[in-house]
Image 1 (cartoon, rainbow, N blue to C red):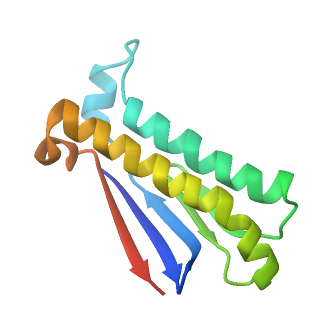
Image 2 (spheres, rainbow, N blue to C red):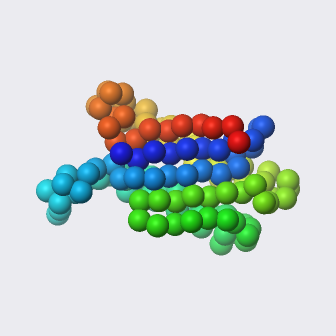
Length: 124
């Protein structure tokens, strides 16, 4: 299961952490060659696009960690001006995640969707 934790401080999103995979190793191995794990792929593309936007487009010095099934971005070291600019990307990311969850809920139901992805919001 993928767990996304969006970190907020006051009115700003100041980072997020994503960990896990939507499918287990066994499910991945049995699905090779098919259009599998679209949830994981969607989350991966969205989250890495945010990282690219922050580091390559906005040229911010961002604290992040990226590994297999894990991405953590911490923006608390950015200036207020940089953090304000970053909100466009981060709020788009948040709304996009919510859209994926809504689509999965409609397709599979929220109980089944929770087997694949959960989004939490925490005040830091």
